Image 1 (tube, rainbow, N blue to C red):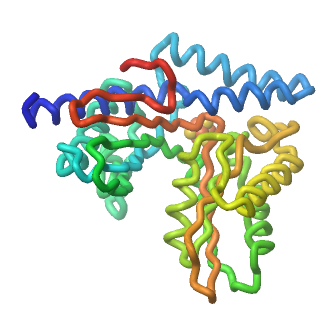
Image 2 (cartoon, rainbow, N blue to C red):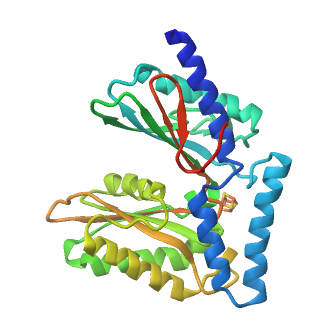
Length: 299
Ligand code: SF4
């Protein structure tokens, strides 16, 4: 394959995978929703979960996005330093969004700041959003596709606390945000929390936390325990599916952290809704690929 042919091949893969992500929820989210449905004992909560599953079936049958809000497209890229298309990834992802907007199709969700004009093709200034990590000595590239819907993004919040606020301050802030705004984002919610020494680092980590598979825990046992306690506590609030009350409020709580300045502790929150459109794909140097988030899928 020539370099140009590889560019074309990866553009096709990412166009199809971006569209696919809008139609099929990842395996771990589906499994978690099924588990939460089993725990409910009221007719209302069960029926809301059932409507979510019916929605998934219809999206597959009709080949349509599973929520009308297909979000702003965000890509989180772990690029191998020896991946042959390293210099082309940005253009490839831009073109993949243009293609998927037409073929999936995706709703037009890119409004230029100050012009206040929808571009009509899901691209715009710095959109699609691309977050980079370089993986040394690797020839493959792993890409997370995420559809950041309006309801979920509305909940995104952050604050830098005095260090004396401590971890109790973080818990208080998380509960304040979730109980005052959680209903905006179609629960049950996956809650991503970033903890760091400054707000922009915490915000980025809070979004990255949404890409961890459900059921994984923070690498530090104390972080893992905090995730468990927050998850239990938020579930006790009983927000339930679509906010109509139930035994659970969240599909999970994930914390990502970075070492902080001694004088500050910043916390940020991002959430994913029940329709958490996240897809993970690994592309190899020969343009073969593996879809990690959805098993046994060929595009
Ligand atoms: S919060 Fe999620 S499910 Fe609800 S409208 Fe937005 S994208 Fe769709």
